[in-house]
Amino acid sequence: MAVKNAAKEAVKEKYVSRDFKEYVRDVIPDKGLDETIAGLTPEKIEKTIKAVIGGRSSRIKAVMNTCIHCGLCAEACQWYLSNDKDPTYSPVAKMRMTIWEMIKRDGKVDAEFIKQCARIVFTECNICHRCSMYCPYGLDITFIIGMVRRICFLLGVIPQRQLDQAQAHIITQNQVWLSENDWLDAIQFIEEESGADYIDLRVPIDNEGAEVMFLPLGAEPKTGTYHIERTAKIMLVAGVNWTVPGKGTWDCSSMSMFVRDMVTMQRIVRGLYENAARLRIKTMMLTE
Amino acid sequence: MLGYRELPFEVKQTGEVYYDLLKSGRIQIDPSKKIKVPVTLQDPCNIIRRAGAAEKFRYIVNATCEDFREMKPNKEHNYCCNAGGGLAALSNWAAHKAIGNRVKAEQIKATGAKIVITPCHNCSTGIKDVIKIWELGVKNMFFDELIVNSMVIPEKFKVQK
Image (tube, rainbow over all chains, first blue to last red; front, side, top):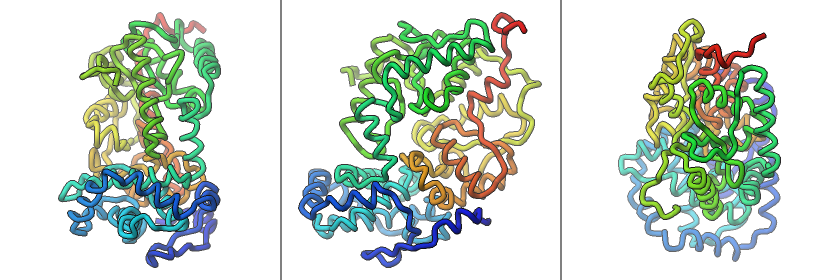
C-alpha cells in the first residue's frame, strides 16, 4: 500500500543509533526529547535508574534470564509487522535496547542513550499487551516498558505533549487544564444547547443516589461536547437516573498511568472513588 | 482504596453500560434507522484484552448496524490502533504512528467496511490518523453516535416544531 506522498517526503533525514547500528529512524523533532537531555548528568541518570529498578531488579532479571528469544512477541507487535519486520521494532528488542543495557552497564549510561530509550518506549510501544499474551512464558514485557517510561519520566526526558498532559493531571486532575468553574460551565452549556432537540434533557450535577455516574474524558467538555450531549440523550430515553460529579476529580483519563507517575495515578483513582462514595452511585461509567 | 475489600459500585466502560441498556430493553432500536453500509469494529486493547467486553460490543454493533464485518484477527487478538499507551497525545508524531500501523490499514481495507466503529477515544484518534495517511476513504463513529441516530425516541421527549 502507498503512503500519502506528503507524509513520505516530509521526513528524509535519518537517525542512526550510536549504540545499536540497526536502529535507524526518521528524525522527528520534539522539544521534550531534544532539549531536556541537556540538563542530565551521569550521576543523576545512574541514581534515577537505581532508584527505579532498585528492589524490583529480580523481577526484571527473571524476564532477562527466562526469555529464549523465540520471536513470538515480535510477530505479535503491529509496529514490527508494519515496518517490514524490522527487528528493532520487536518487543524483545525494545527491552534489550533499554533496560537490559541499563542493567548490563550498571546504570552508567549517558543522556543520548536516555533520549533513545525515551523514543522507543514513548513513541514505539502502545503497552497494548499483545506481546505479553503471545509470550510462551507469559513474560510481562509491558511491565518492563512501563519501568523504562518511569525512568525517563523522572529524568524529564519525555515527548513534550505527553509531559504537558501529565503535568495537567498533576495540577488540575484532568488532561486539559480545565478549572472547576470551566467544567461546570461546560456541562451547563451542553444542557442548555441540547434542550432544543429534546424536552427535559438534563445533565444532572451532583445528583446523590444516582444509578450511573458518568466520567468523561478530559477533552470531552473542551473539544468534544457532543459526546456528553449524546450520553444525556441516551440516559434520558432509557430513563436512567444519572449524574456527573460537580467537584473533585471528573476526568477518567490518566496520562499519569502511561508515564508511570505513581503518585498522581493514585490521586486520580482516589478522587474518582471519593466522588462515587460521596454520591452513593451504583455504576461508574468511564469513556475510556 | 477507601478501605473497601470489594468496591460498593461497578466500574464500566460506556459501551458496557449501553449494552446493559439495550439488552434490558430500556433503549429500543428502530430497525428502519439501522446503518445499511458495511461497518467494522476496532477492539480497544484494554477493554477487550484485559476487561473482556468483546461480545457485549458485538451485540451493540449488531443491534444498530445491518452489515457487520469482523477485522481479522479480532477480539482479544486485534491489533492496537497505535494511539494507545499515551501516544494519542503525540499529534506531532501522527505520521510516524500511522505509518507504523500498516497492518491496521490492511485489516480495515480487507473488510470492505465504510465505517470503522471506535468505542474508545484513543482508538478514534489512532484510526483517524491511519485513515488519513493511508487514504482509506472511510470514516469512524462512536457507540453513542450509533445509538442516538437509531434509537426510538418517545413522543413525550420530542420537541414540537
